[in-house]
Image (cartoon, rainbow, N blue to C red):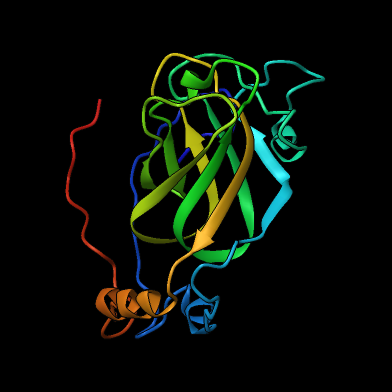
Length: 198
């Protein structure tokens, strides 16, 4: 649970219930066949681009990452500054390519984390230079609907381009088989492990 306005959060109890036997919220989505071939450049919803902070109210906005190599998005400085964009559909991601700003400050991209949804794909290596593309290959193929870049040093985040490339779709089927969970029986109240509260 997360508050959506500036207030306290307090509750006196919580319960989690299963659905009917074999029923999950994502069944319909899981039944849809994913068939994007490997090494396909994934489509990005450029209008969805956003970043944690804007360096300027009128310049260096999130979608400037798509305006060509002479323009770039730009956050304020800090650890954990981020930039993200949604995909035009779910993809099984093999690798992410990021184009560094070309006129200045290439080292600011050093160590930046690359996330697919809330899963870490990897990190951009140190030694980044102006105007260069950097490829981060995920430790394993990750399925998701957006990519996020996150700074790991106290600095600004700016990029001039980004691409996602897909993995072999057969790997998604293998992963789904391994992780499939079936809830047996009628709707059931699940047990929750107690935790200390303050």
